[in-house]
Image (cartoon, rainbow, N blue to C red; front, side, top):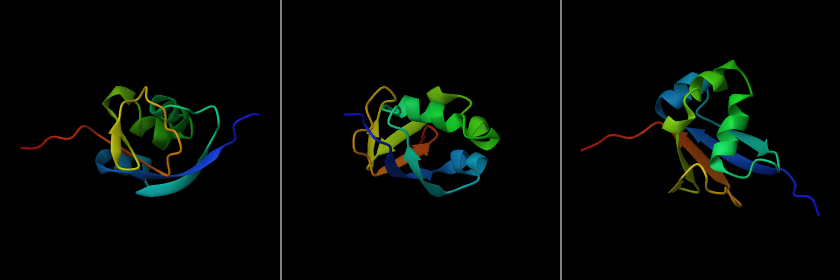
Length: 90
């Protein structure tokens, strides 16, 4: 049985949001997009604003259902995916 596309709620933070031009959106991810890194690559192909926001994928941090994951980790049955730049703090 072939895997089907899945709907997710994407949330963009900080300069990722500014460059994409949206704070959030609902998208249907293709079945071929299995990891956070694959999703970032897929998003970068959606248009110039996405390509600009994701031009340096290694700097993008990902949270799936409010849990931080590495880009090589599977998205699983994610409902909410957040993309944001590295955080600094003190």
